[in-house]
Image (cartoon, rainbow, N blue to C red; front, side, top):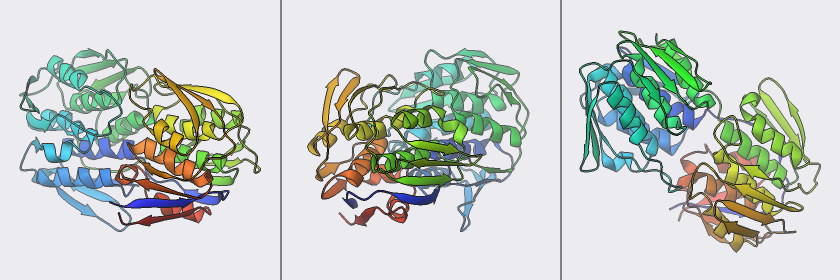
Length: 419
């Protein structure tokens, strides 16, 4: 099992390009199942979760061609099985996203109940209830969702909770349903909008994405197309925090700054000088120690839960005290215990972390527990005295493309070693 070894104390400086968004690429790859011809998806990040999705599609019999630029051509017309097995789905929660497309396009699906990061309960009941209201016959037994429908029909779906994957699954299913589907209390994330734009490029009729109400007029078929995935806003935010925590200066390119308003506003509060262009963001800390900031996570467009761990690490070495409240997932402070091993002064109380910034962290062996927690440990290692060894980095490989190479390009002393 690979590890990252980080020698801290070096301010980051330079420019990097942001990769395509994992959380947009995964549902878009699932959406290719809806087409009656090949779909080419571009700007795909080279990540373990992408490889898992490709393996899942390949096991179904879908034909895949990948070029040197990570454009993936998906031909769903060769599909043989409408089955997503446990051994793949257990490693990546986003595998549940094949349920809606398979059911809508082919009339049946057998999909394992999902796994993924251990950051709290994320039940799929909203997916199942929505598909049932659209006319699906669904039963859950033996750890699998068995779904059938001659043809789904439009329905008004009111989501009890804001759920990104639930919104995406139901939106995809509705594209080939008969009639109109209205999704109320829909997730508003940019990745949902990107999926809607891709579905429309395939001939779908989706309106309202990015708002709380999405309307889908069903069509008879979707065609093949080429679609480029949007940039990764969480990777963007993570590298900006990496520069801030080290007192450095960075410019990230090929991003979309409007997606990061909540994050960049908090970075300004830390004392960072920020400049924003159409496709780039620059941050300069002028070698100053950041100021601690209070944060409450909430669904988009508020502060993202996927940036909470990174700001917890930032607050750990900032001037002053602050509190971070996690309202999205109930078990997303597992990185705190590892940060405490490095000398962080953090007190947990329920869903809130109270931080008191310390003058320095000390390198230590630490263990990644989920994707974003692993990023926070790398950030802490960048500023700690001595060497930090981050174990179980398969988590970070699920969501960050070549993180050690990008950080090294910015001046970090970081290397990957076999476990």
